[in-house]
Length: 123
Length: 123
DNA sequence: GGAGGTCCTGACCACCCGGCCAGTTTCGCA
DNA sequence: TGCGAAACTGGCCGGGTGGTCAGGACCTCC
Image (cartoon, rainbow over the protein chains, first blue to last red):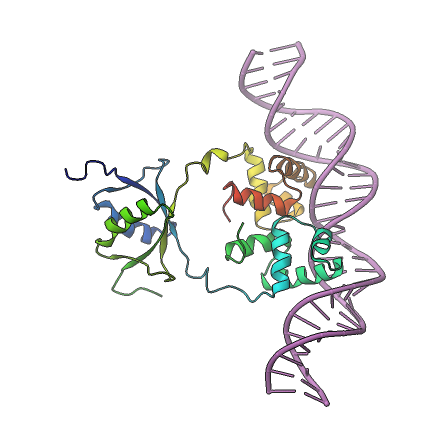
């Protein structure tokens, strides 16, 4: 063996799309020096889905809405956001309303979850 | 929609560990039917690092708390959670209180964000 | 048999949230 | 010059939220 110190790379396949997962498993199963992890096994890296719909859908949020959204994700209340941004609570509620609208959310918690899912913000 | 005859799977390699990334790139570069994504290119899946430290930090949440947490992440109100789980609003508030406590959060939005950050839930 | 944990329920209360109405200013663009 | 978008502010109000009391039922462990 020429590669005496090259340990197998263990990859965990974490793909919901079974068709894609099967194809990947078939392709990767025969690659030397690489192995798919058994269920629960600790892997060096994981293969995860990269949904194409995630990126292009960066909704048109204004700078102020992004400011408010970021603070919302920190769990800040409208009052705290107002203080932080130096504006009134009414204005914060105005921006939150716009965010709920644009993110198609029912409340601030839902808005943060949606934004995180779409990659608008990073948790 | 994308059911072409060339089922080439595009993978983006998102590994900080350059040594590991190089080895993976070398191993995967010669696999037929599979291609590594160019920088910025849209990929079907990504290979990401699996930090072992991620898992052990799963805070001790009861099953019921996980149920409530999952619904909270969907933006559900206490009333909706109660209806969904077949329990009273009071009990939901009880579990939410426990979650805020265990997750060191100031509110439900903060709790969901913390849980997502720690990998307790998946957004 | 207690001790402790989980799960469940009730009531009360201060506060927050989101939606509604209304208005203002400032800016860029046609 | 008018027109819209963005940002900002106010009042009002129904309902939601979080905290604090209280209690009971069920289970396991010592």
